[in-house]
Amino acid sequence: MIISGPALRPSNWYYSYTSPDEVILCQDNKQNLYCHLLCGLLQRNEVTRIGSIFASVIVRAIKFLEDSWEELCSSIRSGQLSEWITDIGCRDSVSIILGMPHPEVANTIEEICNQKCRKGIITRHWPKAKYIETIVTGSMVQYVPTLNYYCNDVLPLVSTIYASSETTFGLNLNPMCKPEDVSYTFMPNMSYFEFIPVGGDKNDIVDLVDVKLGCSYGHKFLRLV
Image 1: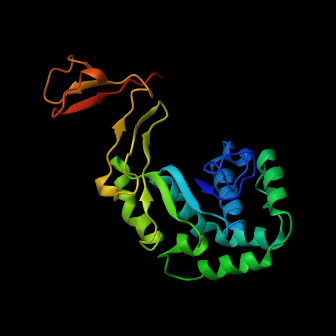
Image 2 (image 1 turned 90 degrees about the horizontal axis):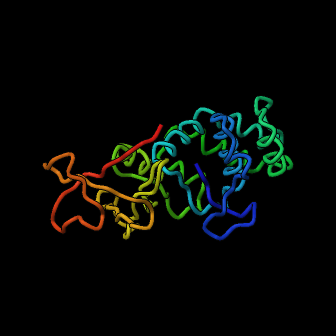
């Protein structure tokens, strides 16, 4: 999960993250997520965008926050990282951001997390967030109600691209549309795409330039392992 706020590295306005590179690149999922949340909560009043490639990751991050908020508050209140954060890159870089005790921030987070109702928990923790950027189509559509609940139905869910580890498939040319109206446009300069006509011969492969208006196609996907 990436929480966008003030720049911590040379960057343009869009790729400005609360977490340092060492956290983003950390391969230990638990340490990575803990440090992401810690950095995001420390800078809660400067965060303007919350995002991840997939909606499921944001939901998982909020669940982690629900389970770990007391320890996060302890780290923020004391100005000391938990001892189980052993990744040197994470520990050194986050300790610089943590800097000193922040009791007021810890008290605010504690007050929010002590409330039994989780509705609007994203907007309460990050009051200046303007939108959530994540993929909400395909298998991710099941997480839309949960995200809407967490943001109290006030933050738009913006799905700008559809991508995988192999490539970016397409762009949403109307990013502010509702999740149920999202569609993606294949961009010929992103990758080489092939398609199979729906209901046709599986061996009848069509290049992007040869698809016909009004016809339906399945995208031919090749994964090299």
